Length: 381
Image 1 (cartoon, rainbow, N blue to C red):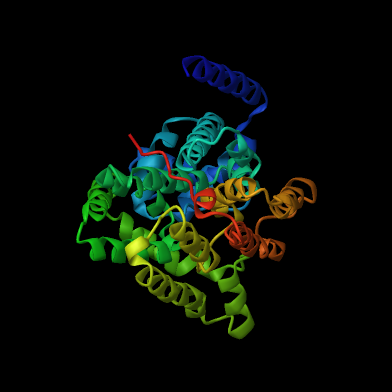
Image 2 (image 1 turned 90 degrees about the horizontal axis):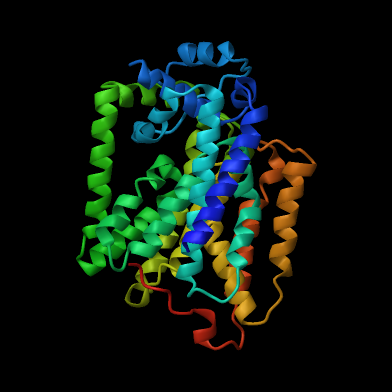
């Protein structure tokens, strides 16, 4: 284990040195990461991280073009604050190394949750298009992934810590609306609230930090969302497509799929509450939650890796064909890295339904024995 860790660290060091030799502030300014760096820079100087004029000036000073604002709520301050201590290019390097480390840890946890199979299929997660695009753009989807897999790993034996880990998922809470509805009902049905208590404690600590850094942060954030928020943009999600199809000015339509998904997830949980399994039923709920989110990008689909890889393990155990996943995964890679299609293109509408279809295919067990489909996960701790 120590030897493997040493090899990984050496590899990280080599990649870092190579990347740093060509990295410039201008390259950093052209990535989504620059929104987080600008917010961190503002916080370090005691300024408003949601001030479009000030953030725009920061980004133009290092060669940025289009304004890129951080739209995460103030509970993300703990994550972006350290970036403000560095130049844009050093910040990008550290940010991408952190994302790569979180992806590596997440894949290792997923491997453990699937019973530590005698293969390395989880390493294919490094080729998952949403995760690669997230790493390339410097987005936060991989941090959300780590929070979710930590929850899956810790919820049995360390529920308070599992709840605390969900603070990372609160960076983009709109992706988890159905999941949150089910989590609340699950805690209520068991009359145990340690997971919710852990999340509340972590959120209070995060909000306390944000108040210290910027007492008016939530007001500033609300103003940004109201005047220039993502709900006014055309982005490749089914909820936005529905809104544009029926009434482009009725943004409330974007929340209709999420409301329906929450209602379905509540029913889905309640009818299975006595045999609920987060590594089975919970992954389906997450897929539906992301499918029906009112706002999201392909980089956010990084959080679906537990469902993608769990489905792959099940298909391999059942000796069924993994080619459906190979085809859609390859298409996602080609679309971004070869065809160079921008992530706000309508051509990314197919990705989330494709991941859901893969999971449903993987869980159609046919004549497989139950123990082949659902191995006992390795306990946390």
